[in-house]
Image (cartoon, rainbow, N blue to C red; front, side, top):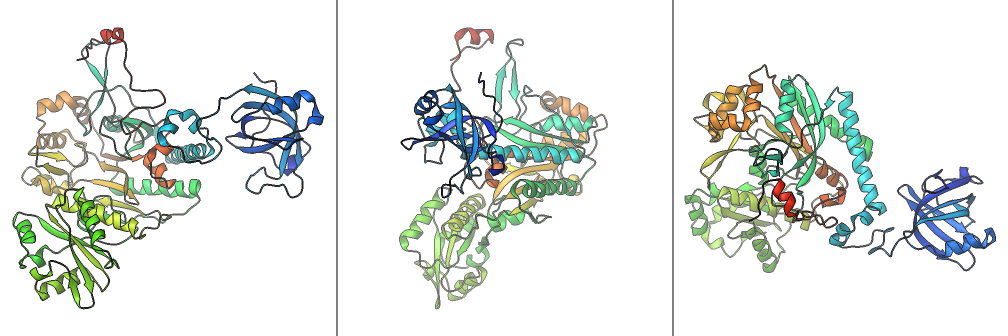
Amino acid sequence: MSKLKRTHTCGQLRTKDIKTTVNLSGWVNSVRDHGGLIFIDLRDRYGITQVVFNPDKGKNLYETAQQLRHEYVVAIQGTVSARPAGTTNPNLDTGEIEVYADTIEILNKSETPPFEIGNESNVSLELRLKHRYLDLRRPIMQKRLIFRHKICQTIREYFDRLNFVDIETPVLTKSTPEGARDYLVPSRINLGKFYALPQSPQLFKQILMVAGYDRYFQIVRCFRDEDLRAQRQPEFTQMDMEMSFVDENDIIQVIEGLMAIIFNKVIGKKIATPFPRISYKEAMTSYGCDAPDLRFGMKIKDISDIVKTSSFKVFLDVIKSGGQIRGLNATGCSNYSRKDIDDLTAFVGQFGAKGLAWFKVEETGLTSSITKFFSAEILEKIKQRMDAKSGDLLLFVADKPKVVCQSLAQLRLHLGHKNKLIDANTFNFSWVVDFPLFDYNEDLKRYEALHHPFTSPHPDNLPFMEERPLEVKARAYDLVLNGVELGGGSIRIHTPEVQKRVFRLLGINDENAYKKFGFLLDALKYGAPPHGGIALGIDRMVTLLSQLDDIREVIAFPKTQKATCLMTDAPSEVDAEQLKELGIRLV
C-alpha cells in the first residue's frame, strides 16, 4: 500500500492551489525527457496533471523517473506551481499548473499495452474487447460509462420523487413463452428441472400491482437467447416501470417528463413535450415500419389504384395476387445513373423485393424504360400522387404488403443518409399508438400477440374479439427516438376472464394457460387493479443520446455478435463432474 495517500485527483488542481503540497496517484499517460527535466502526464478518470521531475530534487527521485513507462501506476508528492509563460495548455482543465515532484512510488509496472490508452486511436473492436480492462481505461470509454451512470442516476431520482418504489425481481424464474428463446439454468437440487433467466420482469411487475405497490420501477438486467444483430445483446438493461389505476396518457406523461429531465440535466438541452403521436396504421402506410424516423419526410405513397388500368404485367400480376405497388419520391435524384439505380435495386433485394421500378421526372413528364406500358393520363396521376417535380426520381416496389413495407422502409432510410437529409444533431421523439392486438403468422397459421399476451385489448373491441381478431386494437404504445424503438408498453389485462380469452386466441387452452401462467391467473382473481407500464432500453437510450452507432460502446462488458466474451472466453466448457451433478449428458 502506498505511503502517499491521494489528496487530489488528476483533474482537480487549479491556479488557486499554487504552492500547495499534494499527493497524486494514477497512470503514466506519457513521458517526455527534455534533457534535464523529465515531464510526465499523470492520468486518472478525472483528468491529467503534468508532473515535473528535477534532478536537483535528488538523484534517486530522478533515476526513478527515468524508469517510468506508459501505464505504470505511480504515486507522487509534490508542490503545485504555475506553468511558465507560453507553456500553458488550454486543452486541459489543469493546463495552467504543474506539480514539481518531491517523492515518487512506483506502485505497479505495466507491459507495453496492445494499443494506446490515452487517445482515441483507431483500434479494432475485437482487440478492444479482448483487452476490455485496458479499453475501459481509455478516457473516451470512461466518459461514456459515466454518462450512462448519470442517466441511470437521473432516472432513479426522478422516479423516487414521484413515489415509485424500486423493487428487485428474481433472476432465476420460470420459463414462460414471451416471444424470444429463454436462457435455461439447470437445477442441481431439483434434477431434470430448469430455471429460466428473465426476458423481462413482466409478470412479476404485474404481481406487484396486485400486491398494492401502485408505483414500481427497476433498472434491471434481462436475457434473451436470440440471433444477434448490431443493436442486440444476449443480456441487456432496461428501465422497467408499472403503475396502477392509470390509463395510457398517464404512462406517456410520466415518460415524457423523464425524457425531458434527462435531456435537461444530463445533456443540457430542452426538449418539447408532449411528443407527437402517430398511429400504427399511419406509420406502416407512410413509413413502412412501426418505428419511423421523423427527422425527414419522404413518405411512402400507394399507386395501386392508379396503375391497375395500365398494361404493365408486373404490376397487374401483383395486384391480382393481393399485393400492392408503393413508392418513394427521391427528391432531386433524377441525375442518378443506371448503375446507381441498379445498386438501389440490389439494396431492396436484401429485404425480399424482386425488383425496383423507376421513373425520372423531367419537364416533359415521366421517363423510364417502362413508360410505354402507361398512358399519359396514368403517368400524370402518378406524378401528382407522388408530389413530383422536375429533377425527382420515383422508386416503386411491387410485392406482398410485408415485403413492400420492409423494402421501402429501409430504402427510405438509405436515401435519407445517402442524400444527407437527416440532421444527426436532432433528437426527434414520437409515440406510435393504436397497434393491433394480434398478428397472423402465415407460416404457422395462427394468431400471435403483436406485443405480448398480457396487453389489454381496447374495451370497445371486446365484443367481437373472437370473430374479428385482426380488427382488435391494443392499448399499447411505443416510444421512438430517431427511428429507433426506445421501448414499449401497454395497459395490461387485469381480469382472468379476458386473459383467458386472449390465451385461447393464441392457441393456449385453459389447461396449458394454468401450467404456464397459473400464478398470474390466480393473482388476477384477487382484486387485481387496472394497471399498465412500459420498459425502455437503457443501452439503446445511452447509445442514441451519445450519438453512437453500436450499443457495445456504452456497455462495460458486452458480448460479440456470436454471444461470446472475448475477454473471459465465455461461454466455456465445464468439467464432467459439474455436468454429472446437474444430471446432464452432452450429446
